[in-house]
Every structure is written in C-alpha cells, then in structure tokens.
Image (tube, rainbow, N blue to C red; front, side, top):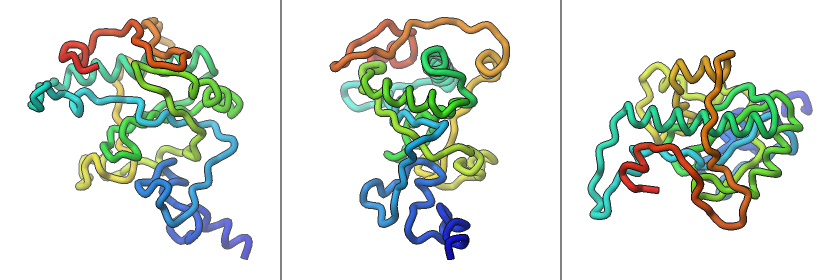
Length: 220
C-alpha cells in the first residue's frame, strides 16, 4: 500500500494531494481546494507571486479606453524586467539554473516568476529576504515552490500554438525572452547593469526605473 500511495502522489489518481499544486505550485481553487497543498520546506525553486505586469493587460487611460502597446514595446519591457530580476537575484543569492515567467491571466498564475537556484540553501535565503522587500511599488511575496521540472508544468498545446483556453489555461504559459538576452544571461555574454527596483522597506518606494511602455502611458 505504501508503495502504491507513493507512486500516485501528486497525480490525478491521488485523492488527497492536489496534483495541480504539486506540478505548478499554484491552484485556481486556492485555499478552497478540496485536496491538500503540501508546501515544501526545502526546494531549489522559489515563486515570486504576481510580480510581472504585462503592459498590454494594463494599458488603459483614465476614461477606461485602451492604449495601444505594440508587441515590440511589450518585448522590450519584458526583457528589461527579466534581466533586472535575474541579475539582482543571482548576484545577491546564488547561481540560477533557470527563471520562468507566466503569461497566464488567471489570478493564481498571472505574473508569477519562478526561479530555480542551483542550491536549495540559496532558494531558502532568497525567500527569507525577499518577503521584506518591495519591487516597483509593490510588496514582494515569495515562497518555496514544489516545481522542479518545468516540462511537467507547461502547457504543451500552448507551445505548439494550439491551446484553446488562452490565458486562463491552468498550465503554465511561459513568456520567452529574446534570443540575445538568453545568450547574455545563460551564456557568457557581458551583462548590463540596470538601476535596481528592489527595495528593503516597510512601505513602497519608487526607485529609478528604465523607460518602458508603462512609463510612456503613465500607468505606474
């Protein structure tokens, strides 16, 4: 019996533990889920909840009409965000194996940033410190995540351009960074330093920030 229970742990056959939380580190039912969300006490991976803000989802004027933000502007904004967060976390806490950002729009996944460190102790240290910090005017909410294999967390239909659920899919839709930035961060290319938007504080502060579509439309 023990071997059987271990073999089905975190799968859809498991009637006790939530398979979505085990695979994705998030569940659309949240605390109302009928199955257990077993939060890890140690992990290589942390999640920064709802940290990324897609300017295309926020581009509204005061009268409620939508401003146009081009795909090029969105990619520039995203690359700037990704580089800043990746560089800040790696320099402060330790080597990062991979970092992924959800482009879903469901409340439990929107803007989630998953960071997999090489060492578990670096992830633990990052969570302890980041929960006392602010980023771009919002409090950072960090926790250890059970996700270690993102291939199991991602929507395969989305990767093939066939997902019919769109941004409300319950599997991760990971937003890619540009190839140049990928080579720069994961390869041996030189890194540019940008003014940090992370602050240790008990109240939000505005830091020096790069120009982005959000700044041009006055949304932050």
